[in-house]
Length: 482
Image (cartoon, rainbow, N blue to C red; front, side, top):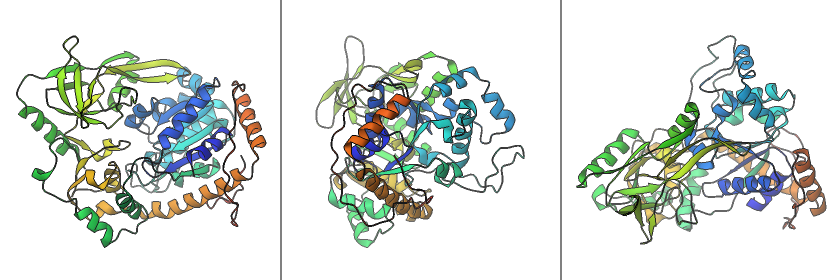
């Protein structure tokens, strides 16, 4: 499915699961939809399953937004307490569209808790209290932390769950009647050989021919580019490398400290989710990585460079990129917004030391080159996430790997085939809707949300030829309507 087709489905107001391979444009599609809504006077609620993901999309964690916080189970007493929190009640009742990014890291229990809180506070029996729900993510990415149990420990909990791990295993996933939009365009990798390796891992058909391509990129640490970002499985390795490399550089460091505005709890949440440290120490020639997107200034989250000098007027670092360009890097804001108003913000220079980072924190980044140590990979998908950060095989430098590095979760593999089929059904359903009818649906949805319909214009879609296949979701057997 193309991004344009996915946007067409989103604009009808149907609930959507937006997925696709790394680099397929999920974040871009969400940002385009958000801009579309805001252009019509509708402020979407943007959340994510983790603090890091939340800072990437300019939102807040789903835990904070719903008032669930650190709870891992929900009792009637908990639900009633949340439903009397005036801040939570105000934002959930005011919401119209709920976006949850990195849904792959959401447990089935948490998804059920979010849905229950929304339904309780909005006092509507529809799933999520009638909100349009947009779940975004790729289940081949890193999964949520596994909780091994057969029943919830608290007998008063609202949900009595078996040992399930993925959000799609929650009954709420089926009740939400999600249209699957599986993006198939590739905007990150431009190397067909490397792309074939990544596809083979994702499809569980990784063979000796694919391994031979990776073996050409195996080398010792002393043979790797000095300034290339290094990816490790464990925080201890990352801290050790960054501290050691910074210490090697002679001279006193320049210190940049994060400042914050707003409620302490929200500021703390922003600091925890921000990839730039609260106290950033830099020296000349330090290898750094940008932690925000600013295409106008010439960098995105993951752009790597070296501290070339410090600005003589204000002392801010000037970063020299790999292509020779120099960027004066001034502080930027990370914010939590609700209904168009900033609730909290932090300000910091959007950089971090980048001799090394964890695979976990690399999720969502695009790197020109990276050194990877996959010998201690311990989780399904961890190797795939690491490898898919780089754009081409020539930018990959492998120190080693273990057997798990090229494996994906077998349950996710089966489910992914269902998602692909469901996405094809979504395309066919969309193709049968005339442009005029689609425009009416766009307008009806915007009107229902209280938005402005004056600027709604539809472009004719290139409709695929109808396929002779069932028009039913393989997961719930329900006919799809937009």
